[in-house]
Image (cartoon, rainbow, N blue to C red):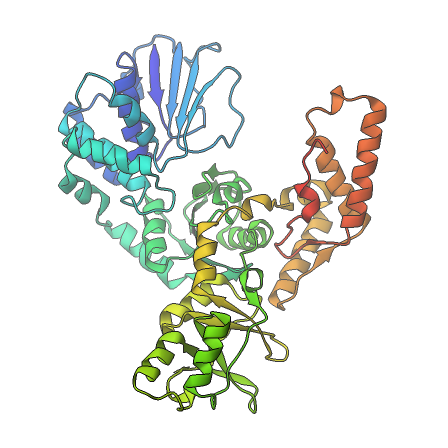
Length: 535
């Protein structure tokens, strides 16, 4: 018997993937998991006669000699599964846990698993029914935020378009089941979460943590997390709800710098980098939250700062400069705007753009002082400010340049322009992917007492606006161990060559140890870890 399964608490992408895989393997049995999200359950109940799904108790007693797993990489524990049964895993995320030997992997970088299946279904001669096409479209729309999430690809849009044009999917039904009303228990929990929301800025990232406690089970906590994320739009959202005998955690992320799948693994859960969950037992709500916050300081990758993208050597104007002089300076240096600094007061008093200069010159006001035309305000950021802070200043005050000042003496040391932000957005992810995190390695290496002490010291330093560093031979030895363990060809190299290679590495790492590894959640390696393992 060949069966198709997916994860528990199944959403539309999971159940739609069961349907899609069944179309590819019509002799297989698509088996619903024990628990479904409420909107999914209602859809399946209403259209049950038009869908091929079975429950586990409806399967015959034949042994399972073939297994297909969709929208998850977790292999369920099935009593009738033969040890040598062929296994096929279909998911829309990269491999994040070891798969059984001999398993066939169909992994793709798309917004939904359904998309991968649609690309194969469209080649089949059999046509989809309207309800089937609608369910598949629900899977794409739910997992891509109606094609608006950053993980959405062109392939998702093409698959959705095909379902609408060829499959006659119904958008009115899609809208009905994606905008599902909360029940009374969910409304009460939602209000409690809103009242207890806490916003933290950790290494330049805005993270919202919501906590609540109930004395009964409330389904679809994930739906509440998504609603809160859409409302507050943080870079990451963590929801912790204490129920009768456990704490349920749901996590969502909007950035690669916060891998919630990895973070929830520390609590016995897991998931994808952007969406994950955990069921925490033997820990109370407060203890779970405290541990989460401590872990965030270790695991969250530092955000890009203004100091990393600003242009240095900025030129400034003074309020008494004339429009004519401002135009000459703009023409000479090719800049579209300049900070205006009151030298007597030692502070920024405005921003003058080329648009304002051109407007004044059209009215023959070349000799007028620029203070009459500049956008007035003390607009600035510091090198440690986040890129989001620059964007907010630009959009709130409609300015195209934001000066960067030295926090200690107020001196203008740089500027960030719209062009800098555009260039950054076009290259997002290129540099961040090179920054690994050493929290897990440190936890394995150090004693629990020392590791906890370092965590507390890191939090204290961050709270004071400082950064704590680990330096010296310990850093060298830690990195050297990682490099040696990560060299797959080590056993094949002659002993003398290996000795020379590792001696050179040790010398390099000893020298590079003076470029320390930041502790307060920067736990980010120096350039040493960018060395290839086969150096």
